[in-house]
Amino acid sequence: MIGHSSVARSVPRLSVVLATDGLWTVRDLVGSLAAQTISSEIEIVVVCPSVAALGTPDEPGPWEGLRVVEHVLLPLGEARAAGIRAAGAEVVVIAETHAFPAPDWAERLVRAHDASWVAVMPAVTNANPATALSWSSFLVDYGPWALGSGAREIDDPPTYHASFKRGALLAFGPRLGELLEPGSTLADELRQQGYRFWHEPTARIDHLNVAVPKAWIHERFLGGRLLGASRRARWSRRRTLAYLVGSPLVPAIRLLRSRQAVVSSSRAGSLPRGTRSATMLGCIAWGVGETVGYAFGARRASAARMLEYELHKVSYLSKRDRPTGS
Image 1 (cartoon, rainbow, N blue to C red):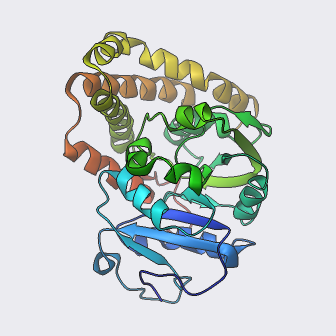
Image 2: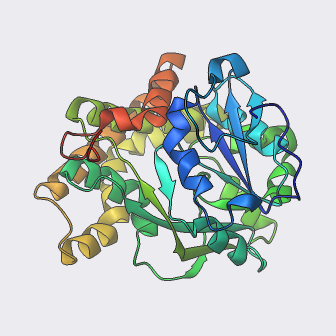
């Protein structure tokens, strides 16, 4: 049953923390987790505003044993931190409603964690590859983790999709929520403590990307604005001003960082026409957003709109990107 405690079982090997506004939003992801090769050793920790808001399953499904944590969803970092604190496994991963793991994803992650790595990042593939808009976002956001990149030690795993040793995260205490926000220093601080990170390309997740033009450009802008605002809230005025002055360089920097992923995907023949132009436009929109974030911060409405894109990305796919039958 769905409740505040998981069904009695042996200690899970992996806890998947998932922020959502309702069961319908996570239906497909929960199904993917139920299909894992080690599904009986996975704990799903759902963070939502209330059990009532989560809803009741209206059809059979893999809902048995969800651990529910009641917490407001904004700031999203605090909501995810609440889920991590409630988790029971040694290894935790922050999942997203629009990213679906391959059946052996969990098994390969926990196997990699048998070594000394404190974080393990899987490979990411584009789950809706029909349009240039989808590819442009995917390559900029997840290019370094695209399928085909080799297993290797890495310096800067993202806070979501990567799996972490839970104890290392809990050691940050009340700062954990802040460190799970965009642009945080989580990886830097873990590295300063001597921890090391690994990219495991045999573990794979398929990631959906916004592909409706108006929503796409808005999401790119909001991503930049929220990053700039997050930094502004933590940084000194002098440092914020320095980044504000330098913000016109942001599009070029983001393009440079994604260049290798664009080139590799282009050589593989997988990119739709217009991807390079869309990538450039998306980086410009992000840069404008960062500039606004450094200068003015961000209102709660911006975070709420970004949360809408995060939770319901499947609603912002192009007709060509939508799965058959949807």
